[in-house]
Amino acid sequence: MVMLDTLANALATIQNAETRGKSEAVIMPASKLIAAVLRVLQKEGYIGEFEYIDDGRWGKFRVQLLGRINKTGVVKPRIPISYKELTRLPESLRKYLASRDIGVLILTTSQGVMTHREALERKIGGFVIAYVY
Image (cartoon, helix red, strand yellow):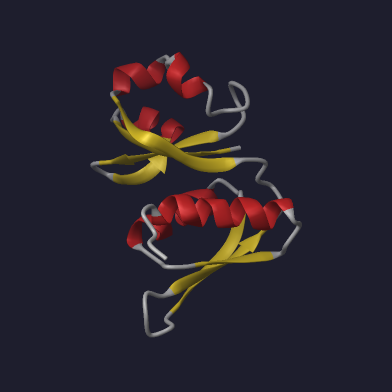
C-alpha cells in the first residue's frame, strides 16, 4: 500500500475513531508534521494526551480522544495566505469552518505550525494545511 499524504491519513483516522465513539486512535506512520498538528489540536482542546510509540519501523502515535471533533481534514491543494488576507478570511477558506467563531484553520508558518488565530496575533502568514471544528 502506497501512502501519499500521511497527514490526511492521520486526520481521517482521528475523524473515523471520533465518529465511532472510540476513546483513542492509533495513527501510523508518525512524522514531525503530524506531531506538530496534534500539539495544536491538543492546545485547542480537541484531543487529550498523545504519545509516540517506537515500533522499530516508522513509529506511531496513540491519541486520546475527547469526543469534541465534529469534522477535520486537510486542505488540498495547500493554500498560501498572507497576514493581510488572514485579517479578513477569504470565502475560499471560510468553507472549511463551521461558523465565524467555531473551529480553527491550521497553518504552517516560518515560526512553526499554529492556528489561524495565533498567526493573526503574531502578524504572519503561511500555508493552510488543515482544519478542525
